[in-house]
Amino acid sequence: MKAVIIENYGGKDVLKEAEVETPKAGAGQVVVKLAATSINPIDWKLREGYLKQMMDWPFPIILGWDAAGVISEVGANVTDWKIGDKVFARPETTRFGTYAEYTVVDAPLLARIPDNVSFEEAASIPLAGLTAWQALFDHATLQAGEKVLIHAGAGGVGTLAIQLAKNAGAHVITTASEKNAAFLKELGADEVIDYKTTNFADVLTDIDVVFDTMGGDIQKDSFRVLKANTGRLISIVSEPDQAIAKAKNIVAKSIWLTPNGEQLQAFADLMASGKVKAIVGATFPFSAQGVYDAHALSETHHAKGKIVISFE
Image (cartoon, rainbow, N blue to C red; front, side, top):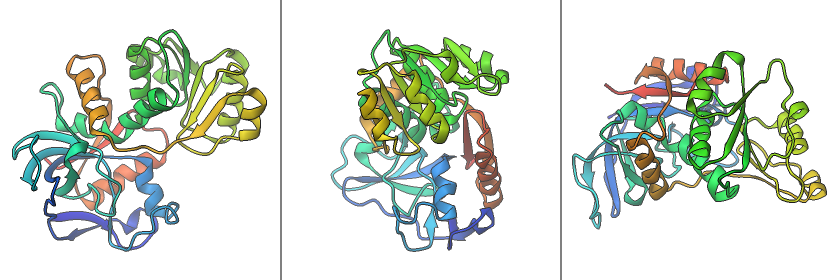
């Protein structure tokens, strides 16, 4: 099968096409013929070598951890899935990712693609969607009526987090540029703060939950807006300052996504009913050049919604 691989760490020019062995389904697994995958910042951070302590893998490495396609092989002991099923998943994090024509997925991590959702839309969801879901509900235990601040609302995780939080009955505030304000209000944001003209920490107070997708000074300023004693700061970027958290008596933690098929199916059900929609901002073809261009866009930090790779 064709795959886009890296054989060493480096810039975008290390991405190359190669013929590699097509994976086989082990017990409890299926093989998915990919129709689409998507780009996440973890992809190019790993490509650059920033994560080699965490993921000390031998080369070659196939990047990518979003799968959408059709099951082409079913392993032993798999009873809920059959060849031809349209599925999407966030597979386990291994060096055999989804920049490839076929990928192996553990059966419990699969979810069905709703009839009203395209492969490209489905591919945009797993990693970003599960990240938003777990940050808001598993870790922040966001409740109806609470105020949540979601940083960088126009990004891949932010667009989904806004919709999930609004659907859960929260009052949703987000930071973004003015050009994306109307779009984010359509998704469910109650307030959009233009980060170019306004420091959110100067205008907000009594926030119940901050979802930090930025880190640095933005994370530090986020402590200022949270309610003392009951506030929660959940970061997907870096470990928050525990001394500040202790002084304010609040929960502040950094999280890492756990692949979860049941949560992804719940997400799919929200999409099927029209309560949540995928936001695909850009699509590139499956090739070394297509992935190169997709990484280049992701690295700007200004992509709107998700960046998708299509195999069609």
